[in-house]
Amino acid sequence: MLNRRIFSTVLFASTLLPNAIAHAAGRTSSGMTAFSHSFTTVDGDPLPLSQFEGKAILVVNTASQCGFTDQYGPLQALHEEFSDAGLVVIGVPSGDFGGQEFDSNADIKSFVERGYKVDFPLTSKTLVSGNNAHAFYKWAGDEVGFVGRPRWNFHKYLIGRDGKVQNWFSTITQPDSPALKSAIRRALSSRV
Image 1: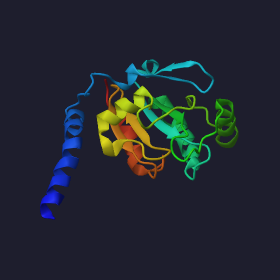
Image 2: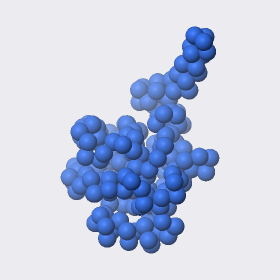
Image 3: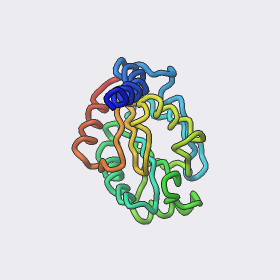
Image 4: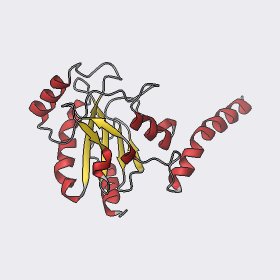
């Protein structure tokens, strides 16, 4: 029993350790940064993250019909509070978890604008998990390791001004939580 527990612990740690060491050392495992990636907006236009070089980015996979959908309100508040300081909030609608996103990008846009007055960038509906996940999500997941990958809607990646993942926050971390706001302030205070 004890040997099995030790083996499980070692196996789990070995999957996380290389990414943790690379992240702690300020290196990315692939040499890429968030600025190497591009999305498509909810309106169908290109959204290269390189246009935000030198800014901090909070990337959140969202869903319109989820129990956590009310996080759109505090996300908009973060956008309003920190955008002048250099934070960009990006919503990434996804139906990966429970199929809780509308099928149409037009319906997604209408819902968030009407219901939450969202005016931060919103991507088209995007896969964020599994083998067919968007390249940004594959990269970010590799950077933070298994435990930092999205497990549900409203998972948050905080990208520093240098384009590296600074931190991640699970679904249950509210956008207006002291921990997230403190991490945002740290990311904004660092210079490239």
